[in-house]
Length: 203
Image (cartoon, rainbow, N blue to C red; front, side):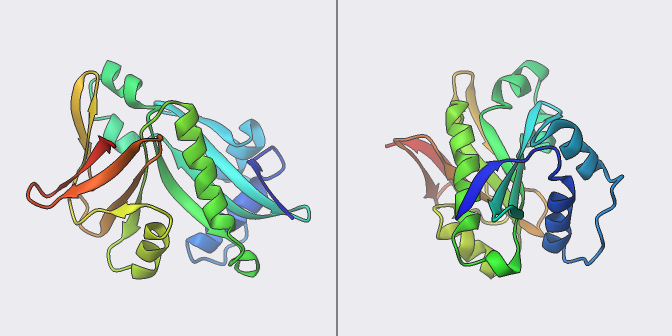
């Protein structure tokens, strides 16, 4: 039996180990690393620019075997006017890392971790969960598509309406594609090929 929960003090080394696995390194976690210090000091709710980063873990038989880290999309928000950025910061979470131990894969833990982030956005009355996937990483693209995410083309924006007008979010780095999912009931993302963009719409 596995449990999905917010990371807590004491999980820092396990989270750092999973981060290293996801990044393809074999480095032993450094106890003084900022990631470990943040988890040990704040648990899984870490203050960041424009809001809070969420570190959620999967625990099985007392061991942390999976984690997801999501935060407000700081690079996008910092280009908006201050009041606008503050209003939108809790509406979107960006998946920055998703990792599951090799021995625990295939049991649906990655999907449950994603669903936990989606639930947090819904609870905040938010619109979207987004992230970036490397161009050409078709395995990752398939993974997110199967879980209801849409993969944007290179520089293809996701457009959505707010009470203050329209906004769009995109990835300008051609080495990556944006992936996104609408999380509120009754909403969905639809691609408009004639306009080369993806719209968030109410169904």
